[in-house]
Image 1 (spheres, rainbow, N blue to C red):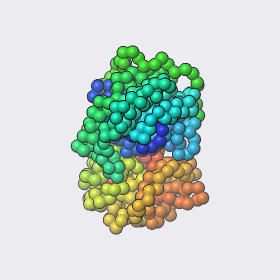
Image 2 (image 1 turned 60 degrees about the vertical axis):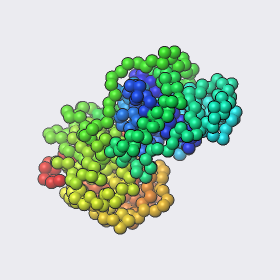
Image 3 (image 1 turned 90 degrees about the horizontal axis):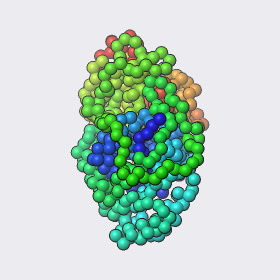
Image 4 (image 1 turned 135 degrees about the vertical axis):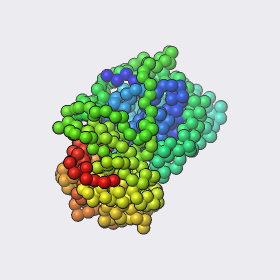
Length: 509
């Protein structure tokens, strides 16, 4: 049973400013000592990273397409441990789904599965009384949805704001805040820098979060919004655990039984007391101690814990937070290696995992780090587990745009202007550490680089129509397809089992 106050922030469509408002709200919650937890619906790890930076703990993705609708509520319950309030930022519009499965994969479906109120961020720059018709339509479209209020963005003037409030008052929808046209400047670092500014806690990223927090605190009734979050009912679900199979979650549709929402915002606005927040790890190392024992096939590996390097930076990795948790539960000692700065793999490294959030735009820094590239190539030659997703594959290639990389894979990459983006259903083409041949998975692609060739003799995956993609060779599995390991937890067990083979002591890093 999860009782953490929570709210889902959405919008009629992309472009209404919900990410900036979400970051600002989390910063405002943190400034009030509310120990917030941050989540992003969908696959966008960049947004999740900035939400986490504002919250002071890693942001997490809730993606029904990647992990299954039944895992969403358990993953949320796991991610709010130690928090006193949670904010979930939606994806696209409230009822949108890339795959056309709005009943299970939209922001509205996730909000219903979490029994959470929804606050709609609406760009009203070119809107008057019609805002009431728009908001009423979003509220009436789904009788299970609990629309708790709106935040108006890009209000032109005080008079404009009064007109909008009067219109929304007529349909009894609370206005929780009104931001002017210049109140939310585009201060977050450029998206092509990806999650790197967050992993480094760059001054530019920290200042941006502070500015958004101050802007939202000045224009949004943060206490009233927190009270709305506090009126969310208990969530009857057991938390997901990396030490075992996912617990029973909501019905497969992701919807909960219909019923009236609980009593409205609490009159005091006070939130339940709770433990202090869990901040980002300053060293990139996970807490010491024996891994938890769960119902995995063999339990954590016996003997010394094999060292698995996870590509990232001082404040996190390029993988989802659950990846490190799963590896630790499987018996690994997880340490961070920074591909852009570290000149060698951590001592004792016997496996390497490079997540899909490594940005393509840092090819110059990767090629300049020749000593680490040689270490990665040596690890792969020794047959040790090396798993790379997204731009991680580019790092293992022979070259990218003429710049030499690790040379583990006999392929080159050329960066183009267009972006390949979207979900893919793939079938494992070869037995590997990730999955046995024939295994069907759902992953996500977001890249500009085109490979030549795009697959090796033993491809990692095949798409519909039989097109091969990626590379499998000895312990190497590399693909531009990004996976969420919480949906495929057996990957961690397979990696750690392979890393724990006795010959790991012979590998020099």
